[in-house]
Image (cartoon, rainbow, N blue to C red; front, top):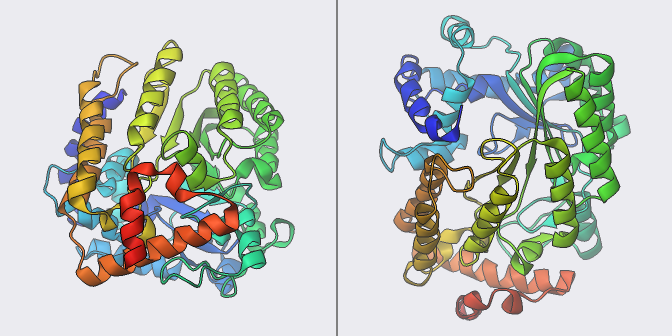
Length: 455
C-alpha cells in the first residue's frame, strides 16, 4: 500500500476501535519495546519505560512484555480511561478529530480480526504474544545524542562517569547512580529473551532491533545467525542503526540481509536511522556523528539492498531553524533512488517532549513560528502523491500536527523560565565537555541563547 492511501485507511479503523473504547490502543497488547540492558519495557516510545520485575520473568519469560503494570494500563483502556503515560497521543487528539495521533495510526496498522477478538473477548490480564517486538540487547553505542540517556549509550555513560551528572540543570541531569546497566553476556533479561524467543517467534510478525547501536552488539549478529539456521519466512526484521559505524559492518549487514531475503528465510527487512537536520547542526545534536561516514554507509545500504530506509526525526528545539536542510536532502536522495521502490527514503516527525531544554515550546513563538510555517510550506509546495521524488500527503499531515502543536502550546511563565535557564546552563556545559560551540553552529538562535543567559 502506498503512503498516499494510508490516511484513509487510518480513518477507516477509528470507529472499529471505538467498539472497545474511545481510548483503546492495540499497541498496549501487540507492541512492545524491551530494554534488556536495564530490564525495562513500554508499548510504544511515548510512555516512560517501566521496570520488569525479575521474579516475573523467572516464572514466565513473556513477562518481558506482559508485566503486571502493563496489564493494569490495558484495563484502564478497556474501561475508556486514559493512561497517563500516553499523554503524547491525548495531546494530539485534543487538537481535533482530524488530527492523526500515533494511537490511531497504530490501531490501523496492527489490526487483524483475530487479534481484535482475542482482546475484546479475553480476560483483561491475559498474556499476549505481541505482533511487534522492539528489543535492545545492550547500551553499547558510539554516539551520545544530547537528549538521549546513559541507559541507551555507553559513550554517554562514560561521559557521566568522567564529568559527573549535569547538576547545573533541573531537567536531564543524567545521574547514573540510580540504575544498573547489565553486561550483555551476563544479563538475566537477555537470558530470558533467549528462553522466550523460540515460542514468541512462532507468531511474531515484526522484530525490530534497537540500541544503543545494534550493529555493535553480539546478540544482533547471533539473532541473524539464528534466522539463517532456523528460518522464519513470515517474520519481518527491522534494525535501528545510527549509520555511524565502521563501513565494514554495514557491508557485513548488507551481505547477511541479502542472503536471508534471497533464501526466503525471513519475509522482509527494513532499516531505520535517525537524523534531525543536516550539516554541522546535525553533528552537534548527535555527538559522534560524522556525516561523511554516515553518507557512505547510507549509499552502501541503499545501492546494495534495493530496500527502503526510514528516518526517525526527533523534532526538537535545535531542529526548528534548520529543518529545511534535511528536507532538501530527502528530495535529493529520492531522486537518486527513485527507481527502486515507492518512497524508498521515508521519514516520520515525532516531536520531542523532554528534556525541557530541548522542547521547541520554550522558544518565543513570534520569532520561531515563522521557521515552522516555512518548513511546512516547503513540504506543501513539493507534494505529489504520484511522484516518488516528492513528499506525500501523510508526511505533510504528520508535520502539520507538529507545527500546530507548537503554535497552540502555551507554557506558564515559571515553566518557560525553568526551560530557558536549563537551556543556557545545559548547552554551556555541553560545549565545555564536548569541545563544541553552540553560537557558531546555530547563528539564528544567538539572540535566544543570550536571553536565556539573562534568566
